[in-house]
Amino acid sequence: MRFYNREQKMNLYENTLYMEDVNAVAALALPWEKLSGSTILISGATGLIGSFLTDVLLARRTAGDDITVTGLCRDVEAAEERFSFWKNDPRLRLLSHDINQPLDAGICGKADYVLHLASNTHPVQYATDPIGTITSNILGLMNMLDYACDCGSERVLFASSNEIYGENRGDTELFEEHYCGYIDSNTLRAGYPESKRCGEALVQAYIRQRGTDAVIARLTRSYGPTMKMSDTKAISQFIQKGIAGEDIVLKSAGEQYYSYTYVSDAAAGLLTVLLKGECGAAYNISDEASDIKLKDLAALIAGCAGRKVVFDLPDATEAAGFSKATKARLDGSLLKTLGFVPRYDIKEGIHRTIEILR
Image (cartoon, rainbow, N blue to C red; front, top):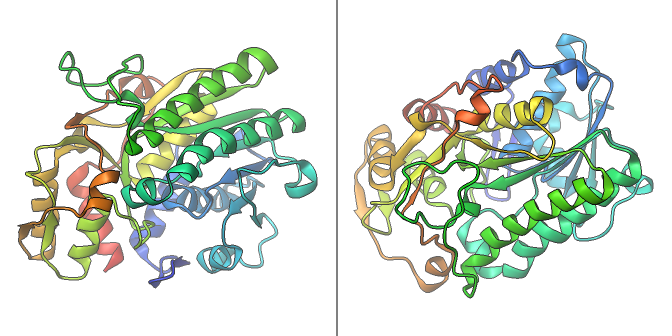
């Protein structure tokens, strides 16, 4: 399997640790029979989580499930390189489509399940493409929902974000699903969390008005070996420096306290929500064992790489895309009532990511 982006190619399918992760999620005790013989449409199929999830679904063939994945992406050539292991497998269809444009069965066939994972997900994108950040979370989602309604799809999953909670008001340590903190909507950076909030409201509207069966998964800051080298999130930058054997650059005092999720646990959480979640409900995909302060995360990665942490102020473009939240820890207990059990804590996940990417 090829991990592909414009800066780097790496063979992932031949990596024992990566395939261990894929097969572990594919072997989870979930009601897979719901997906047997079905077609699943995934937007953002080449993203950090979407690409891993696609591998998991296609790996289910060893269990006898005949699952077909239709992956929407921006660059089919890059997607074909990323999924080269499945090149001749008819169960994977890759289509170039702008999700801000309407979808129909004539474009991508009919799908039984629709997963909207496509979104700008890191600071430079928020700052340089604020319109695209907002439209993919609202117009893109609306197009996916309309497609699902027209096709008679069984369920839609919207991948939302921990950012919908806004800033911690100081009245709680962990964000439960009903929590709603402060967001200054009159800023460039607000485009991402506010559009995710609007996306969730849109899901509820389709449930009520058009009878759509839909669920919401709120992801934390995710990481793993499927990350792209162009990703500008802090954790991604730290990992990139670590595997390059460079010092870890911290662009603040590092007191920010966040929840993180390794990619295989994120995918396992999405599948749990898709297959076991209650229609209309939102679920945090998180675990307290992966909560860590930014300075401690930097030190952890520096220790793995045998380097040190250095401090450097961000430039104006970077700063415009940074979250102002200083504490964003999620309560993952609701998802655990559905049987979700995370496999890796933050230390194990970071070690695993660096080991695979090396």
